Every structure is written in C-alpha cells, then in structure tokens.
Amino acid sequence: MIVELCMSEIIKLREARKQADRLNKEERAAANRLRYGRSKAERNLHAARDTKQRHTLDQHRIETGDER
Image 1 (cartoon, rainbow, N blue to C red):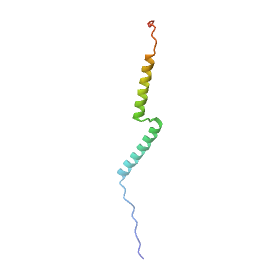
Image 2: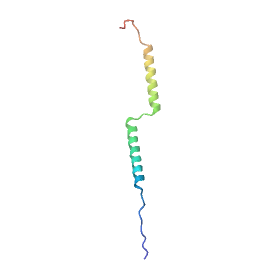
Image 3: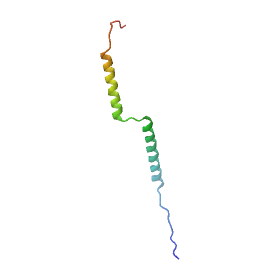
Image 4: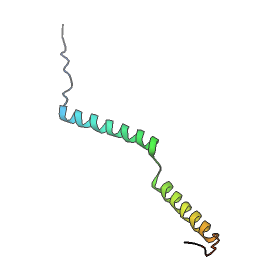
C-alpha cells in the first residue's frame, strides 16, 4: 500500500497582499469610472461645444450702450 503525501502550494504572503491590493484598487477604479467617468475625448468634445455655443450666443448679443 503506497500513500501519497499531498503538500500545499507555498504562497508568499507579501505577493499575495500586493495582488489583493491591486485587485481591490482596480475594482474601485472600475466603480469610479462608472460613477464619474467620461473619457478625455468626451470631456474635450463637451468643452468645445460649450465654447462654440457661448461664442455663437455672444455674436447675437444686442448692445444698447446703456451699460453701467
């Protein structure tokens, strides 16, 4: 009768903690992207549209000369 001894895999605790921290940070970042996120391209597009709208509105402003 032959009995095999099963040994557990050796885990380096420092590496396991770092890996767990990385995973937690990535999950938190993904949640924040969903909550707050717009891509840089979307922010730039929104800023450009806003600037254009303000410029167009300023062009149509009627000045009366009564400004104090």
